Image 1 (tube, helix red, strand yellow):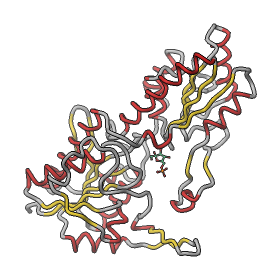
Image 2 (image 1 turned 120 degrees about the vertical axis):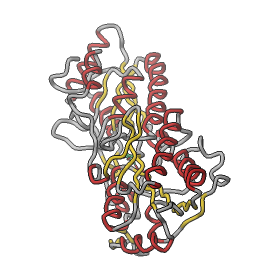
Image 3 (image 1 turned 90 degrees about the horizontal axis):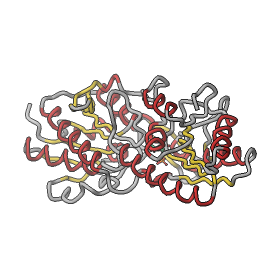
Image 4 (image 1 turned 45 degrees about the vertical axis):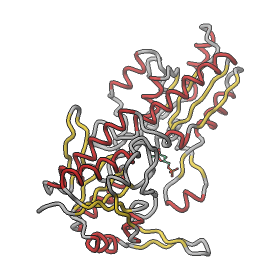
Amino acid sequence: MALKKVGILTGGGDCAGLNAVIRAVTRAAIIQENCTVIGIEEGFEGLVCNRTQELTIRSTRDILTLGGTILGTTNKGNPFEYRQYAPDGSISIHDYSDRAFQNCKALGLDCLMVVGGEGTMEIAHRLYQMGVPVIGIPKTIDNDLEMTDYTFGFQTAVEVASDAMDRLHTTGRSHRRVMILEVMGRNAGWIALEAGIAGGAHVILIPEIPYRIERVVEKIRLRAEGGSPYSIVMVAEGAHEEGGSAVAQESAATRLQGVPQLGGVGFFLAGQIQEHITLEVRCTVLGHIQRGGSPCAFDRVLGTRLGSRAVEAAARGEFGNMVALRTPEVILVPLAEIAGKCRTVPLTSQMIHCAEAIGINLGRQNGFS
Ligand code: F6P
């Protein structure tokens, strides 16, 4: 069956490289398949509420380097658990998956490209099970999707975070302070680990390894005694103490999205450290700066490769799959094997060994440093 019409939506939190994917899908679909391309606005919200725009080579011109997504995105709008807000502030949850299915049909889509992270891939898989011809494209700064070496957006976030580390080093050393950088990473510590290694962190705390404050303080003290009265600590937002839980905000976002809004562990940790040492402690929360702005070259290339490979898969009718980087190739992996799974940093990972082998403290009892 010839491919005539392709839809594309971007779901979940944004990241750098989304527009590179939109551009690649649009160009490959038009140049290779002579297709019409329909952009669905604001993720699944646009699919439920039928908000679309046609994408052309002209309308996707100049967006390769542009941050964000020209289609808009939202963490809300899951068609299977659609949250509706009443003026009195109450929320009701509805199953609008049939509406999404019918809208795909009415649009005449031969394929729906779903660009997103783990939650978005789970929805994509459920739509595929209902009969929607879906192809997934992996995105997230957290890099926590199964079966792909990297998701696009991650390397850009690592670049931003390691640049921030470089800056904290100079001010931290000048003032003889302990500088904490809190980065994103809800369940997985990939950003903290990679950017921490790249940025010369002395301590890196990740969600996979609950920390002991005595170990962190010991490292800072040893450094001070050894003639380095300053330390740089990298902490992922989902990191927590042994026996504790991640620090979350009581916020409207938490209520509206139904998932806790993380953030604040950096300040919590600063308070803990300050109780034990005389050096001053400061905390910086990098937050959404990691998600905004222009993608690095790696993410531009990865996004473009994934987008063009997705069109190829659609033309061959290989639905129900996600395109994935298996270096050096881009392959297809079944959505069924990714849906609902989160790829955390394995404790046996060489990254963890490498960090500890060079003396980075990971806050654990039996770590090397
Ligand atoms: O999933 C990516 C992510 O960046 C998480 O690390 C973070 O917890 C979350 O998005 C924050 O999302 P938002 O503030 O957009 O709800």
